[in-house]
Picture 1 (cartoon, rainbow, N blue to C red):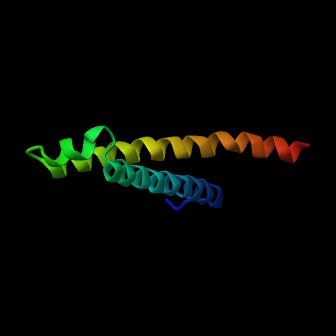
Picture 2 (picture 1 turned 135 degrees about the vertical axis):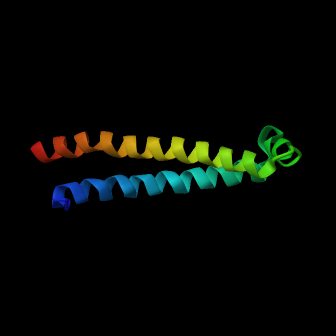
Length: 86
């Protein structure tokens, strides 16, 4: 079943905001490991399964930042509608 133009626009809108969240999550995760905040890098890489820990860290960050970014995008739609009415 093909999507109509409004559905395509909504999906594109969400994907753009999701990509912003992904970039923010990767940036934050790399910075977190780079500065070794609270010795998290040391704990992760000295464990028995460092790859699993880093993957889970980034997965959690991606889900969190992506969800927040999409939510902010959706919530900002109301402001755009209010401006058009004025």
